Length: 316
Image 1 (cartoon, one colour):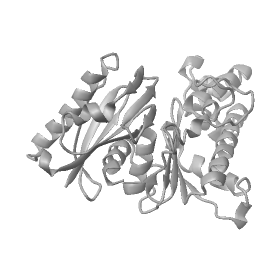
Image 2: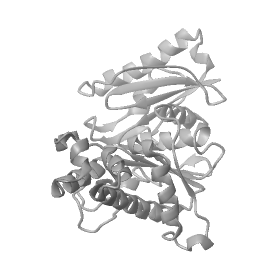
Image 3: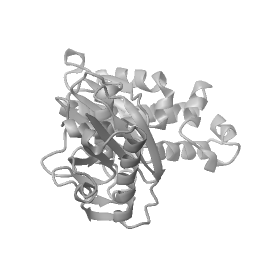
Image 4: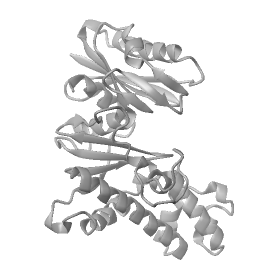
């Protein structure tokens, strides 16, 4: 039996047909166009899956179910997206609406949860049952896998790792609080700190790498500057490692997973990011090296993680 996995994004809807070996047999995408009524978006999701089945010369009878990873606060039990800022959604019955187009089961979870599940089933944490995934993008998402299952919490909104407190009264977060993890370890936070450091130190290589325009700053530039022993760039990177390391240590103290996974553009730094983080948390996690310290790894599935994870909601 096949399973369909849908990754609902703000820019594109991506869908794939996944087999029992966690291989995506066929995939496609269409623009999301979030300004539309949710019914139109969900119809496009259904059409994507049906078109993929047709291209494979397969029937819906061969489909065990359809899983969806959606941004926002998702009630996995009811399949309702309670709130999604990017979509302007409130209490959208995603599973029920999509279920109108299929006779098989439809399940929904948060997109970061699905990405985490995908990495556990087929990626950087394959055959590992307990893992945490932290997505480092414009914001910070989190997915927690316990005994091979997505941890949803007793109610919707669990495992919002980006909105735990890191610095009391710190930088303003998009959620309205101050000092959240997201405000410091997101790509947005990294770029903000790099801009401030470059502006404060006109001699910093970061200004040259930005071609004299700080609007060109990105998350790669401070790492490139640090590679050239630029003091300002080095401080930005070191501070970022501390912020992220403290956050990871907090999550380890709560969940004590087998592995911690990172995803997002900053993970292009690979060992320059993961090695100092693994070393940092050795002295920050409760029990130190006398207790189990998980390895910090970069996720490897990229855009496929969400689809594979969503498909595996059917097996949960």
